[in-house]
Length: 135
Image (cartoon, rainbow, N blue to C red; front, side, top):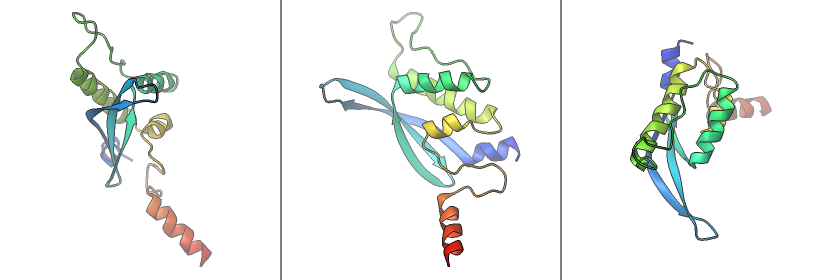
């Protein structure tokens, strides 16, 4: 499959940041990661530390772009909007730079049944196959 075709099959954006209060009353910042795959959209909420864990896993198996730093040269930390944009760019770069989207990234995005080429690529297709086999 041509790289350009594959990159159009899955689109990822991080449009916003959400805050969640845990049991201890501490506020956690979560990035809303939206995934468009096979014309279906879903989202996952991810903490900054989960992006860092993903980066460590990916570094072992592929050439990765530099992971965006939390720090700014002049400020102690970067504005969250800037951080959100950098993380979005990071994920998009991985998708566009790799002919096969790494399984670690698909797991992170909660994407199932992602295949390249003309293989089955949606849950519906699998269900249709299953129902035909049992009839």
